[in-house]
Each structure stands twice: as C-alpha cells, then as structure tokens.
Length: 472
Image (cartoon, helix red, strand yellow):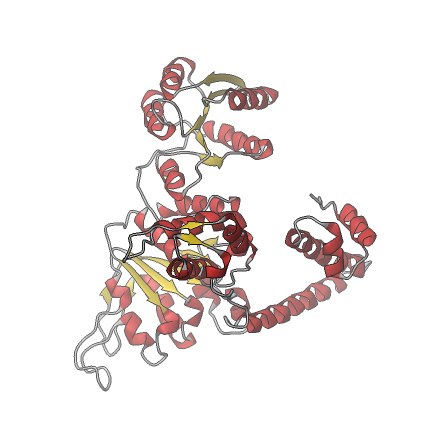
C-alpha cells in the first residue's frame, strides 16, 4: 500500500507539531503550512492525499482556501479544525466539501480515527464539493451540540426523511428550519404543522385538504398542509399524536407523492421533503399498537437526537447571553448583563423546559432587573417535572425498562450456555450506567455518589474499577 501524504495547515506551531507526529507515527509523509496562501502553493507541488486545515488563519481563512485546493488538485479530503464550533461553520465546511470538522481542543484519538477514514476516502476519490450557505439560530459549543450541527450539515443536502427526537423545548423546530434552509428546497415553503394542536375530527382535513361540500360546514375547498408544502419541506411536530386512522393515508401520500383531499376522488401530485419531530418513544408506541412501524421507517431514514439542556451545561451561559443580546429594554434602551452568581445559578438548574424555559427565564429576569445587572433573585422559580407532566412519562419509562428486561431474560434463558450467571450479567448491564450518571451528577465525587446510590464508598470504588469506569 502506498504511503499517503498529509498537509497540515495551522498557525499554531504546537498543533502542526502534534499532528505531524501523529501522521508520521502511522507511516504518512507530512508537510505543514502556517497560512492558507502557503498551503495552496504547497498543494500544487506536494499533491497531498489529505489536508487538515484550521478555519481561522492569518490572511485567507481556511474555508475560503478549500475551493482553491479543489481548483488546484481536485476533490481532496479536507478535515477542518476550528475553535469556533457554530452551526454556520459546520454547514459551510460540509457544503464546501469538507470530509469532517473537529472542534478545538480535540482528542488525538478522535483525530486519529478521522484521519484514517480520510486517508481511506482519498483512495476512493469520491468527494464532490458543494455550495456554501449561511444560517443563524441554533447555539451551542459543547460536543453534544457539535454532533447535532454535524448531523444537520450532513443530512441537509439530501432528500432523506429526518426524525428529530428530544424533550420539549430543546429546539427541534429550529433544527428542522436549519435542515430546510441548507437543503436544495430552500426556495420552497417551510410548512410547520403541530399535530398535537389538531383535533382528531379535523386532522385529516387539515393535512390532506378537502373538497367543497365534503362534510357539513365545508362551504369551500381547502388546500391541506401536504399540498401547501409542495416543492418545499413539511415539518410534522409531535408526530406521535397522528391518529392511527390517518397514519396509513399519510404513509400512502409519502410513498406515492400524491394527496387525496377529503371528499374528492382526484389525486393531487405533490413533492416535499418530510421532517418529523417527537418527544415520545415511537418504538414503544409501535409495540403498544399506537403507531405504525411502516410509517416509522418512512419518517426515520435519518435520526437526530437533540440533547436536553441539562446534558449540555456548558452551553447555558452562551445561550443566556445570546438571548440577552436580543433583549433591549424598550423604555430605556438599556442592555443587561449577568453576574457570575446568576450564571452559577443558571448552570445549577435542571431546565426540564430546556432552551425554551431558559429563554423565558432570561426575558423575565431582564424585565425585573434594575440597573442592567441581572441577579439570581431576578430569575423566576425553576419549573418542576410535575408541572410539565414528566412524572407520568417517567412511570412509562419504568414500565418500558421492565418489559425490555423481561424480554432480555427470556432470551437469555432459552440458551443454557447464556443462562449461566444470568444475575451477574444483569448487574453488569444495569450497574455501570447508573453509576456513571451518579458520578456525573456529583461532578466525579465518589462519596456523595455512593450515598445517593445507597452504597459504601469503598464498594462503589471497587465496582467502578471492576467496570473500568473512570472517576475524575
């Protein structure tokens, strides 16, 4: 197998050195550049197989340089590295043909894996650069949100149906809008439909439209949401609430690209991309007979999980400041600022209402604050689980877990070899995730985590070692 040549472009000497060492340790030849202009010159003479390039460079930026690379040496895999992991950077990088993008500070193991994939890709020569787009909206710099940005960037240019899952208030509609804006259908309409807001009696008429006189009160014909979305994107929010009686008709419309209005025998051609969203477990609803599995597979070609805010605490300050920038006191024109104590309080809260609750809390606090400084006492009370009706969903989850464990036990006990030590296998299955969450909750402190679990600290330490769980 021939030796691959890597071009590393970064104005930080330590980054160039570290990546050079990594590349050479795998037997690759490595050349480095500190500017995009230097990289373009080297690319013509060295003909690299893979390029690793920083976004922020003196002079020409890395994203602009990518097109110059393609013009000079063709579609080469480019790994973009950046300290500014926003959605616009991610999408622009992918649209310009980037193989992947990684946010600083990055783990060398992560870079090693991506680098090897890029080297393998360079031998297939399949990359085709795309076109740049722009977007504002989703905010976040944590690894969890970077994964969301990357998923949006990867799927936007396709026609694949997308299922967005996550708790209420996490920003699923914003993600849907981002996919639409970066798609080839961006010039078409974005039709958002909240299924939960439709009455069951009128849901069919709202979705598919109806002919004049189709039912009592239908004095004129109505164009349904599916037809309104023609040449654009149809966003079905709370898709789990689609009445079972309508699901088969929706599936047929999606499969055939035709809509049959209520009371009509004339099918109407329509073409749209469908994005669905839900905060509920569709797989569980399928088992309960409340959601069709064939419709699920039609809606879920590509799935993106939007993480709850409490799982990305590092984004809370950024989001709070983002909302504050957009709130100016209409009477005084005053802008507000957050104290360190207020930020600490924001980061302590569970945010069961997620980003929507945070936005409302910031606006509430800005209205209450005097002198432009937002103090902890200016914040409204935190929203509880019971207020949002999450207690019931927790009970449902417990029942689902119990059912899954029963199925697992039945499967294990059908095989005499697997049935041996089934209890130890069960502990090894359920203990590690519980212990990891407990440690995460108490920021890696073993003593309070052990008390929470009802274990002695020594017992917890032994189990952590047994399962290979790192305790930071």
